[in-house]
Length: 365
Image (cartoon, rainbow, N blue to C red; front, side, top):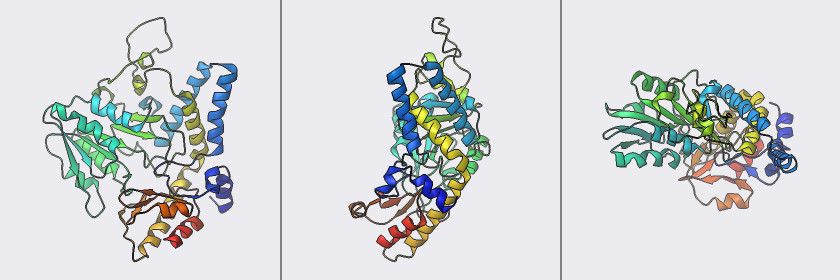
């Protein structure tokens, strides 16, 4: 991806004309084509009314796009409204009982905390694995496992400091030891390679509004076809059935696919936006991963060279998220830099950011 191609892409993101946007771990920038697709959906509905066959067709087309992106089967993909709902499919669907243990990392976003803490009334214990020197590895988590451990649930990439867990190693261990493995992938999906054919995961969830540069209010959940029957249904609706569009024939027959978790009509406009952004980014998929890594390396090297700053992200693995010591993000915003605060200054450039923007940020520091 050359400089001209990046500049062409940037021109379709109005936000970038206003500021240097380095906060993709909070919410990605919206491209004009994605916004236009969502707006056109509503305009068409306003003028022509409903078109359910076409809308459901986009749902299935997008399901295939998601599956292709992560190297899974469309039958293993279901839609929900956010990542927390996906974690709840596991926490409420697994039949955990008194004395069972769930292991989660420290520094987790609350989406992967509260659904497990809610099981305390059943006597289920949630164990938290601490970071060591700003890093948490698969081996750290495995060391905490006991004979009572039934679930390991992790953020693939930490929203706090960008720590990236080797889910291939951890998934293999879980499979060998009959431990249900849950992954919140929202801080890695569309930013770094995710190939579920190479690693065992029972359930994985992600939204689209961060690195995938899509709309909010919709998420996807991957449920391994071999793990699906381990989960009881936390809810059910007409769209959960094997023959959902036979409205006048009532027959309780759950879908054999992950679609069983879809209860009714979808957020059709948001899914059309997801379809657009995945179609836009997929041809650049590998280039996106490489470019985010290069920009992150440039950023971390520059921060390391400033004596007054302390890098709080692990150096042994890299994601698109960098955390360093500091407060007062207002000073950044006054100078048109958009960053975030997570126990320090959190910076998360995407592939459309430029080397010049990274250098300007470092010069500001």
